[in-house]
Image (tube, rainbow, N blue to C red):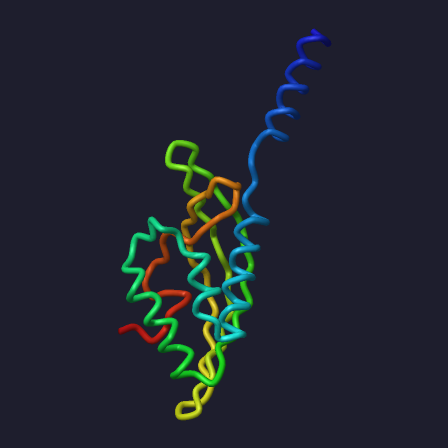
Length: 144
C-alpha cells in the first residue's frame, strides 16, 4: 500500500513538473507590447503578433499607428491571472486583467479597467505571439 501511495505521489509530482506553465511567457509578451506602446514603436509591437493572427494584421497595425497619433500617451498595466494550454492546437488562452489609461489632448484621459481573454500561438522557441484579441480590443483603440 505504501509503495502504491509513493508511486502515485511521484507520478503526481512529476506530471505537475512536466506541465508547461505559460503565465510568465504571456506576461513577458504583454510587457513587450506595453513597452512598445510607451515607446510609440509600431514595429516592436507588431513583432509580438502571430503570423496566424485571426484578425486583419494591417487593420491592427493601422489602429496602433492611429493610437500613437491620436493619443498623447497610452499606458497599460496588465496581469496574467491564468493560462490554459491546448496541446492539440498549441494555443495558449490567457485571462488578463488590465488597467489602461489613454490620454488625449482634446478629450482628456480615459481610464479603462477590466478583464479579457487573449490567445497566443507558441513559437518554435516556446515563446508566445498574440493570435486573437476580442473586440473591444485591448490594443489598437482607434480602429480604421
